[in-house]
Image (spheres, rainbow, N blue to C red):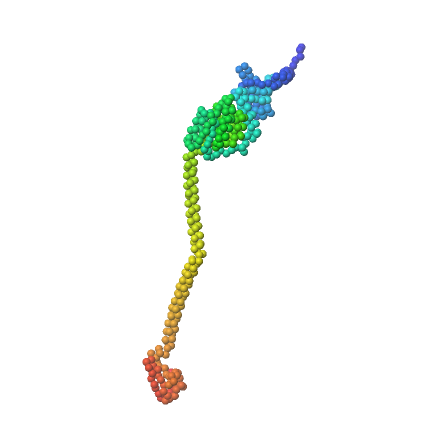
Length: 401
């Protein structure tokens, strides 16, 4: 009986045959992606098919570093890898080392490679971006002379500010001559001392927009002294020119909105600034008027004239106060004098005389207050209120009343 082999031995033998085949060790296979699955391990399992057949494939996680797009159903791709046998199931499959999009995908891959190269060189760095002038009056436009892009820019510019000057360089924006035409147009406008330059075109396929993904255009934009707004395609289209430009606009219309300042809005702002300035100025004038009045009051207060007037008024006040004190003193003294006069009047001999009393004096007008001062036979004078009476003492009696 001939030798009998196990399944594993057969699968291993076949795998060894595949391994020794030079072509199968490094082969490009073109096909459409189907049954694509991303495993949690990081591996990608898929199938490649065409009208005549299907082959299974796998890209291990270690090889995914070279995959710069998301693999998904329906994509036309080119797979670089090796074909070998999976011994466990006895099936053969392609082990992918690199996967590239076919057709447009090749352009996309070229785009990604150039983008990565220029980015590593620093050409996308924000430190090299020039600011877009806020009030541009001379705007250069590098685009086709016909088409929606230039019409959109003209319409928006006319609506926003009819006084802005637009300078069009009619460039070729598609085809084999497009790169040279765009580069020449940008350099021409850059020498005209524009305030800002818009470069771009309307939307299209990646092939239509490819001129704006060329390195020559990117380097020209990077080296320009005039700020550049890139406006290529529609909102979802992004080109190398967009990354290099000082500002990216999603559409040519948006580029016009960014480059052309709104004249009416500008006038309104000026009016608002004018009113704000006038209000601030009026407030400052009022404030300074109050300060001047305060300073004037201070100066008047410390001036010699004012000091003299103040002292004079003070003297007048003192004089009035002194006069009032004198008056009060005089009134009080008069009152006191009246009281004392009344008291004195009560003690006055004349007042006593008016009540029937008299006082006695001798010939020498000495008042006699005691019987011991006179003798019988002496003359005495009786002083009454209305005259004097001379009497002779006939009798003297001692004793008390």
